[in-house]
Length: 396
Length: 166
Ligand code: HEM
Image (tube, rainbow over the protein chains, first blue to last red):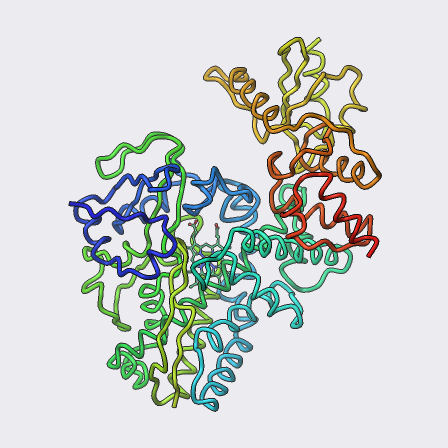
């Protein structure tokens, strides 16, 4: 029997352990149609590794152009559709992706590598000096923010304001976060980049905003909408997800002392540890697509126009792909998780995210001798982003 | 006549695609903008023959044989009409300024004092455009919540006016 749970509920994901629910779906109902209690549109729920990774790669039958998260699709489509990289398919997607790829390639992100590693070290140093800190806020948050702001060209003095705005936009640290606040904050961020883009047209610098304002695809510049929404999605994509992974990594290391020992002693490489941290934390709990034509998956007929949700949180714990999937094992190999998606929309920031997590794990290994929880960790409230927003710890 | 209008619309650089028909004794032109925004006011002045009304759409719905899906188009028109308020002409400079701005951003003609920004399809980025224009043309930086809470034209005009005076 399949348990009935409403996955649209924001609070559910943060307060309940859904492992049993996912396992049950994977085994008994891997392609499941869900009718939410709010009476709004229903959608497919895909939970196995096989199906999730297949849909990521199947751009023939599935599109991102109406939206790529459940809430936006159920509300009738994302207002940024076709105006940001993740919500564009086909040649236009390839064109914009190749403009940004130079900055986000493995070599491209190394331009901020030295700075990220030194910021990570100095944040851990301050945390050590203070004895106690909220790792999610004090260490995990500033790193991705600093990195993406460096790349975008956002000046130091504006960064914390941008951070406050973005952190309350997709997910919330309180359960009663209102729609108006979310709208307001999103608007402020878009407005910020609209102004910045206007400035860079006149006075270009060495940053992504300038790159986007100057870029040409087939002899035409990007539209104003595309420039603003792509900046917005870089800030969002880069900040919150990586913060969740880093905060979650520390929590997992505290809860699994043998893994912390393995990291400290050098028994596992940092690179291998980073992959397990990504699999274990899975900050993007789901992604979503819309079917372009009728297509069969796992014996079920998905109709053109249907919303299909891909649950990374479940695919990453699929026992047919990962041995002991509920064990946090830094040496896990192979570790082909779907945390960063797959196919043509595979995370543009993958190298940057890995670099950032790597910098923090390295700093912990080299500088910290012991860690303990100093309070109750807290999770964010969202049906899309999952992870810890508060991780009180004491470091030695 | 509808075909002539359709042809001249299609030839216009700001129009991506167009379909023209007669509904309720009115010539109705359905247009898809070529770029991100389309000023119907400019389009009207550029045309020799003009339709009685415009309906701006993100894409032209097509029937199986590739011709316009007239039933679907008619539904879009009905939907737009339902979202309009009975016309009340803008009464002062700020109302007229905002009405003109909304018309360009929303692709809707004859915005009245009682029309509602969100009901007519206003979204975040369009609100950003309003804020950019108000900053440029009137030197006021309007917080987003002001637009969110005052989404009816005459209300919006009143707050912006009071902010400008302050
Ligand atoms: C641990 C951190 C991160 C996670 C879990 C994550 C997750 C993902 C996932 C699942 C996708 C696929 C979306 C889809 O298929 O619809 C994606 C795409 C994307 N990510 Fe990330 N991401 C992370 C970090 C970053 C960073 C640091 C950046 C940039 C600064 C970034 C920028 C993007 C962009 C622009 C896309 C769209 C790519 C495309 O559509 O071609 N992400 N990310």
